[in-house]
Image (tube, rainbow, N blue to C red; front, top):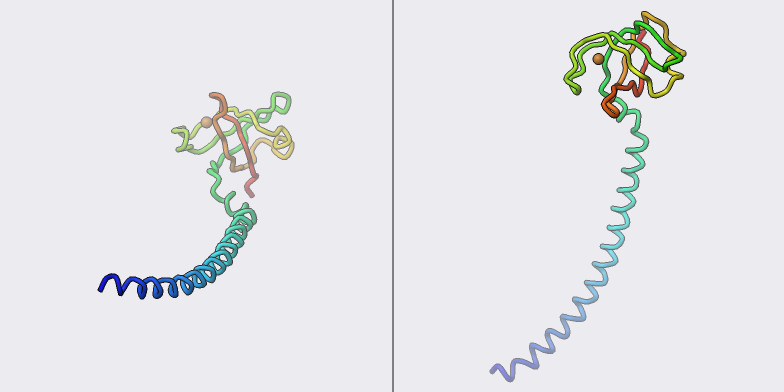
Length: 133
Ligand SMILES: [Cu+2]
């Protein structure tokens, strides 16, 4: 029975194989199209995340403070600021070098600001700063 059945199975399988391979081709074309679309969607997402930069900026770890003094020559400003949990820093008044000295041109003592500081080489530096109204 086995011997008789084999050619039939072979034929059957062969017939199926043809169907299967055409299905496979269809699937792989569909799959490629899907992958392409997924890729396109992915690049859209990258686009979206680029466009969403201002939203990412909302994640800045702002600290509020008040300008006490400005030393343009040294590129530093003294800020009385609130606590900075990320540095384990309590509220205090301290002098910070600024990343961009042009920041200092817009400021005068008494201005309320929000700023983001970072620790660079053991020194704290003001990366960005905005005046509060
Ligand atoms: Cu401080």
